Amino acid sequence: MSLNAIAFINNRKKVVVLTNDRIAHIISYVIECYNLLLVDKPSFSKSFVAQHTTFHFEDYLKMEFVDNYLIKQKHILATKLSSLEQVTFNYETIQRFTDTSDGKEKSDKIDVYVNKIGLKDEWAVDEEHLYLAIECKRISTLSDCQDYIGDIEKFSTRDYSKLRIPFESQIAFIESSKLDHISVSNNINKRLQSTPTVLTKQLLTSIAFNSPFKGSYFSIHKKTFKKKEPFKIFHLLFDYSQLITN
Image (cartoon, rainbow, N blue to C red; front, side, top):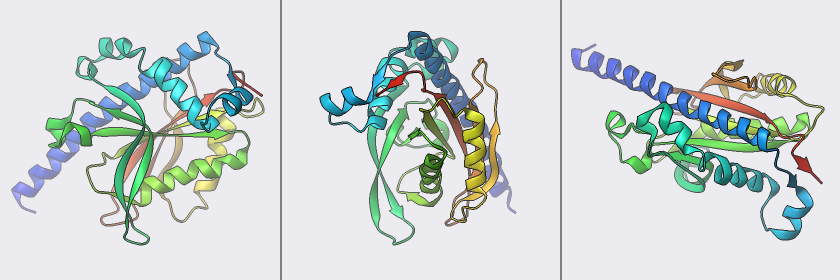
């Protein structure tokens, strides 16, 4: 291997390590926002959303969390890491990807789009194409974990036209008091082991942030195309069972 190739690989590793640290700060902040939500104890009514909005309930939960917490509390994030002072949180952002099953270019609606994470020089891309994607799913029964895995499959099989950093995130809104993050994560892992379309190197594994919150995990997978490059997912399994009403 040439010296230039070795230098490129080493530099890539440094950028990935730096990005992992930056994303971990963002995930920690998302958890802090969830803790603030638990203190506020808002009530989310399914009937209200059905009667007074045109939103799917999952989208309503997502937008409430983004608008009332991730955006409003950004000063907390800026005090922790100055390079994240300009970070933005949006929802329903669309990016382009090529479907590896049929070779056609399609649109991908990102649930929560986290931009301006302060690494555009390291990745040598435009700021708009450097982002963290967070996908959200409601989980009322363990069977809903299959839909959750559907997002992992999308991460694995979609070939994006612009840069996609090797880090993703997912939020589960757990709606049933009969479930907890342990039962949900165990069920996801069980399903992953029998999902051939997802190349899993590391099943969901508990990861601690500086918070009493216990429902944070990470997993590692590989893309199913080209060089089958690995990527990491941060999973946040949020208990919403006491916040949702009929």
